[in-house]
Image (cartoon, rainbow over all chains, first blue to last red; front, side):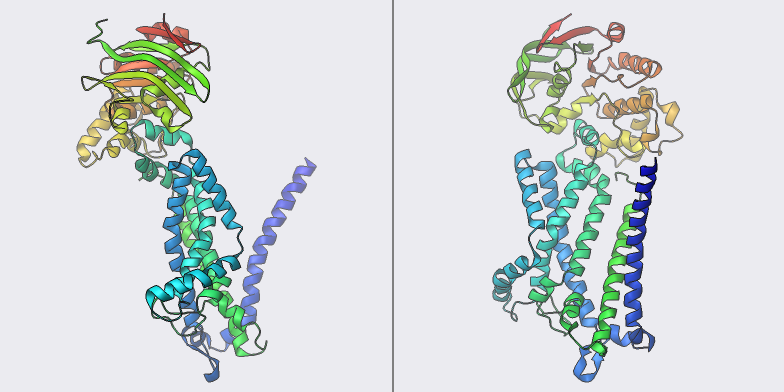
Length: 284
Length: 236
């Protein structure tokens, strides 16, 4: 009884510490970014261009770069991951499905820098040659490689979600003559929706938070991108590049705003997905 | 039994294997049309497997191998369901199945019953769908119990009601054969009695094959009894 109480207290403490850490990180960034937030420069920082030579410290190009690369990566990764998860869990012969599942697990362990190297030496020249535009370091290159990076995690989530659907429900649909596609549409996807959305949130968080791929493949240009073949700089890459600046400089202060925006974007994405997932599970 | 008209299902030298293990051993049997045939026998002898062979549901699990011939009279023609190119979805609609545990889908009572119509894209005429749902629920003595809560989650029904709902759902596809895998095993005596009465009535429209462990029940409802032991099916 006592050990159970101790365990409950320890678990509650762990939960509170996690929640407090999230709040404290937010406060830390807000306090350190306050000199910029407080003197009315916020709109200029959010909407202006980045040109320290002209005392302009706007991060609009980085916000756009982050949104473009993360959206592209997600748009590519979600259908591919879902298709792969359905193949592994539903349509593939058992042995092949298991082998693919192991392969996907293995992919989650590959360091990001390896994806970056593959991108630089294989993908960037390919994009450069096919598009005939610039050096190949672009939103497209970073988005493609980032989709490959986030796909394994999403596949594992999706597989888990599909596997959790009670076998009896699939069996019921099957016995009524449902084709594999109908089983997928009417039984598996609606019931696995929460886990599928959790996988998408995780993928989005990873896509927005990744630094190395963007740093290596996006070109790090501070100009506002006009197409997916243009180079860009993400908020995370910007933080990594500016971190060595003088602590008191305005450049450095903008980093906290970058971090705050990343934090808020991720929180917003999680909130939206949670709202979608909160609807009761009912087959259409 | 007149073999040309009364025989609904014919098994010829039917053997079934899971890996190296032989579950069914060269079974030869016939099942009469519009009759309730019960299959009895000790657990683990392959009774449920035999049912899933008749609608090819075992193929979804995999790992099995079949030999021999399974013929079912569908739409007036004897069809070898493993050799003739009969579409699987159509076969499963014609040979419906009710499982030991009721398995309503996580949707309303109404949508559960209308689900087979959705699968064949026959839900455009809402009046016709409503009429069919009401008819199926009435056939399974469920209409009066659920007519005021058709849009409630089907999982809120009692076990007996859920099982009758599953039978109503299977009937929506207008099956010619209904396979029942111990349909009253998880129900109390009263709920089981209602199901038995329902099955007796269904014989006029369907051929019923039921696996049961309850000999009293078998005596009450069965027209034909077969015992499955050591992979062989024997008439009683």
